Length: 333
Image (tube, rainbow, N blue to C red; front, top):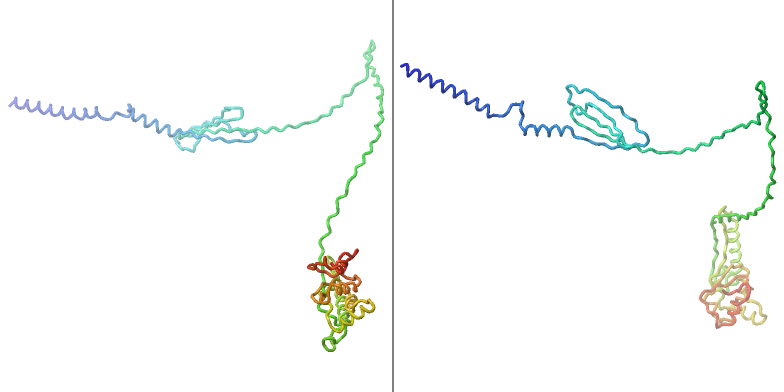
């Protein structure tokens, strides 16, 4: 029994030692403790630390001298805030550039460079200084005595001025501005087809006639002239006839016989002159009796107003051509 008991105790001890050895082996082959970190863990921590120390650079430009900020050093304590400033250092990196380095408690670093632009303004000052020059000093032995001799009076040299030169400058006055345009009010009195109606009732009983027509024209002309003129407006009146001033009939037959017998003007010529036309033109009836009769009719008005025609060729009619070539104011234009 004793052997069996010893054998059982030995097996129990071996089993117990094996159970204890397995955890010890697992602990030995497991992850290392924090006291001795692995290379992979150290690399991750370095990357996180480098990310925290990210550098931000700002560059500003100022005109003139900048306001210099002092250096700062503070304790962070337990704060790891990205906004709490730990230190600020200033360094002159170039002649016109100042570099500020900001470090925060979180490990973040910011560099700001300030470049100054100096504007130089040159100011010239003129100073006048009066220096008094004393006269000669005479010294005698014994007590020191200073005798001051006044300077000789200043000599004034007068230089005659050169003769005055006379320069004649001729200037031309600017032309006056053109007058402002003025308005014009025209009263036009017009008639046509007089056709040798001398007497009242020649065509219609108690109607017409040269005398009545002249009375109406004179009244209308006087009324137009009596209208007050506006300040910036001129006015005028024209009396014109558009032709057919005579016509074959008993009246014009009498004019022809009278002219042939005495050379007197036609009655129609006298009527147009009395009415006071400013201008007249030629109608178709003026050519009823030929160019010689038309020439006599125009000459009978004695050139008191022109006869206007833009479509008449008088080169083959000597009598009418003579009216165009008349010196002064031709009666046929």
